[in-house]
Length: 519
Image 1: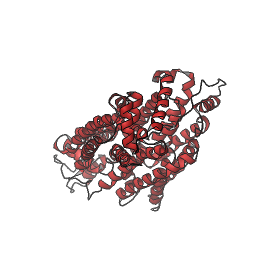
Image 2: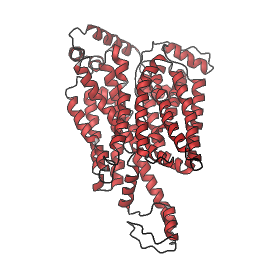
Image 3: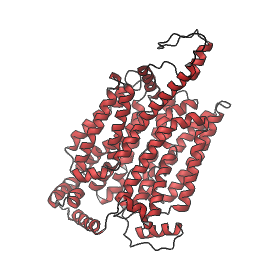
Image 4: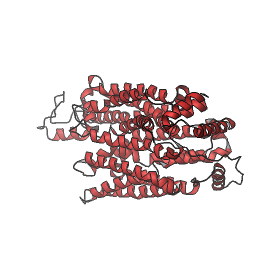
């Protein structure tokens, strides 16, 4: 481990940190931002209940209302209140989900941008998006806040979609073989650390208040400027220089800086072999992945694993945990949300050791099974909290355990397994599909969760329990174990599980390729 290696990994991981920060930052100030939206749009009433209460007891003054109110209900007022409540719900859902829209679009272009401009320059280019998004949100109080926040979140999502591919790629390529796995996990650790930091900074007495919430959202501009400055001192990826550009002299120079010694022959020979293997295997397009019978089963499994990760309900907790704790009767829900972030961070570190010791499929099934029971207990606690006060603590404990089981299995493992399903030729297209699927499901949950929660009430996590159970059964019957197996062996397992007797095509020994999860 050299100083320049630590510096380069730290600099790259700042992008991952921003990824996590953008995921969690919208959570704590939810009610304050909604209140500001209502103020900007001139909507004074909270919901239908508020107007009915006023009609019954007109002695209470409703602040900010520009309309004179009579003790009797106004014709059409109920419909107007419902429409207003629906508008605010829609704008808030878009404020959350526009981030996922940006990530969904950009997830296809991270690898292309890295190949076109180099890993370091690509991260610099991506930072311009982060800066623009942060500035839009930082100045949202000066204009139509709902439009600026939604646009800023969308542009920040573009940045995170790019960075979710660029950062693991860069760290994996500059790391020595013996440290590649350990350093590769720092991307995910930085993501969950960013989530936790956003929750702490979002406390009411720091930045999560009526006066400073826009600064909270725009604070990522500081990180973008800092990382951009530091990137000028980072060495370019030796693998990119040698394998993509055939610049052996520059690759050796970069390696010498990273390794701290002059004899880099072993690294150069390894990259030469990798280049020969890459050139000998034909790349597979996205269309071919779906039309070729030999790829159909692994592609289906890859998509289902990522759908399971997102539709498990985990992002519902990350995006809306404060309001969930509030409904659970917790007096200080924001601190419980910070507790979720802390648990998330700790168990991400724990999963680093478990993934390499236990089987991928086994850990995924254990995590999903644990989440299934936690979701049931979560809903039971929410349903019965009015009858038994202690049930609110059942819900809270269930949420903590839910997050723990997620990080043990369904969080990191889909990315590991998808990389291991495919050889060098189809792997880039498969990972692009997986990333797009992940972000798309993320968007659907971010957009729809509030509506689902409003419709289902305390029963919402019963729904997610059913979804988790379905994906658990699919994994048990259709997804093979990949740990320690070659691509040929994995392909044979897929053929066996699909009931086909067809022999797998020519095998290519599988090499591990790390990638990160999208929450």
